[in-house]
Amino acid sequence: MTHQPDAGGFDKLAAELTERRQQHLYRKRRQLQSPQQPHLRCDGRDLLAFCSNDYLGLANHPQVITSFQQAANQYGVGGGASHLVIGHSRVHHQLEDALAEFTGRERVLLFSSGYMANLGTINALLDKHDAVFEDRLNHASLIDAGLLSGARFQRYLHNSVDALENKLQRSTARRKLVVCDGVFSMDGDIAPLPEITRAAADQGAWVMVDDAHGFGCLGENGGGCTEHFSLNTDRVQVLVGTLGKAFGTSGAFVAGDEVLIETLIQHARTYIYTTAMPPAVAAATLISLKLLQAEAWRRDKLQALIARFRAGANQLGLQLMDTSTPIQPILIGDEARALELSAQLEERGLLVTAIRPPTVPRGTARLRVTLSASHDEKDVDRLLDGLAECCSDESSNG
Ligand SMILES: *Cc1c(COP(=O)(O)O)cnc(C)c1O
Image 1 (tube, rainbow, N blue to C red):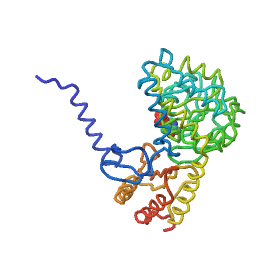
Image 2 (image 1 turned 90 degrees about the vertical axis):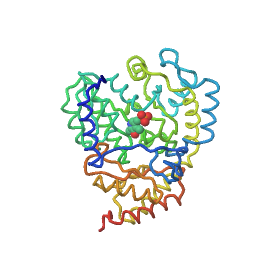
Image 3 (image 1 turned 120 degrees about the vertical axis):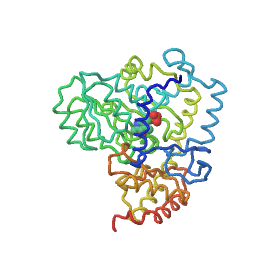
Image 4 (image 1 turned 60 degrees about the vertical axis):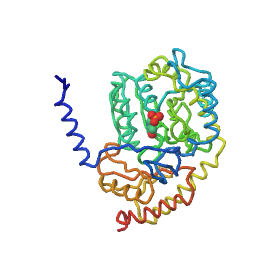
């Protein structure tokens, strides 16, 4: 007799999947068959993509690749153990030191991913005696981290310093932590950090900024939003960066004072109970950090492409967000319509992802266009031509 574990339960899962498909919320994966770059090969087709977070074009940079290969020859591939056992290699440590200098912080701690950095950090700092205040458009990893911590969880209106101040004033928690994205991943706007950090300081709260999309793109040296606004550790006590975006590699880091980093080494469970990132990734990141700092032309080119895109999209009457970061969403609203537009663009060889709930609030589905220094002007023009053909009905001027 065949044993059928929980067959009834799985029928219910199948029904939920069908319902999700009907609501145009079903997610499917594509298969990339080339490096991550604007002109890529995907599911057997050549496409021009505007959806990666490789903002500076470093993911496939020859020097970054060579460094990775050489380090793999020297250190092998696997990290082999957690950092606290025997997985912490010299090159990890060198990268931490280099990132500390880059961010102007005393110390840096590497994590295997941004999700894990956020989960580990908030949970190491807070428990049920504390309160966490999060922008309601924060990245899912920050929301999950706050909820898991057991601290009193409070969301404030997007970028509203008044709403935040109000909640901070009413809190009697032992420890208060304000948490926000530096650049919001689905809207592309920048948090008003000078005001947020002032409000937090007035109320004795700490500030944690996840600058996954700011590093490399903002600030004269690519130091992200804390460089852009000149905010040191007195104002932003916990600074998070991810390495899988503008750095073009993989992993994440937390930067801050000695006491913060030592606390995380002792208590951050996503740091302690996981295998160290492959040392070759750290070696590759040392080179991408060098390129990110030295080659300011990448940021300049990116800004020029962003300006070109915005001018063209405005001329088409498309609804953009008020931002000059490489995240340039086009607001559509309806989920089915966003999917349809994305499919029509793809027929023209253009890859732009439709972002739908629950990643963004209901009724705010969008085409999330991201630009990279590895795009050319003619790539942006091709996108604008495609948008002109597909999106004439979306025009906000009729
Ligand atoms: C991408 C992202 C993360 C997750 O980083 P990974 O290294 O990909 O896990 C965290 N926070 C924000 C704001 C992000 O955009």
